[in-house]
Image: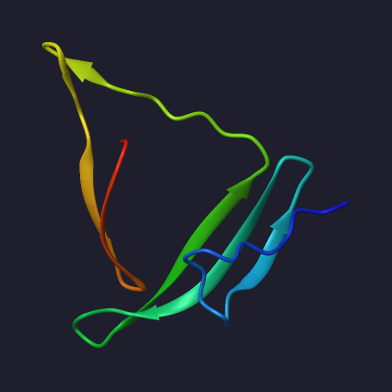
Length: 76
């Protein structure tokens, strides 16, 4: 009854490093823009909540760019 391997935005070589009752942690090595390599992680949860931050009647959103994905807009 585990959580399925995330299909979105997860490299094929990602490895499951932790499985709990409520979340999983996946890791993979990612080459940085300067040629060095770093370990990246993705956490997958069964249930989640997004916070809509408002400052002076304006909703705060952010633009993100990930090495394995084009730029996208998300909530903080």
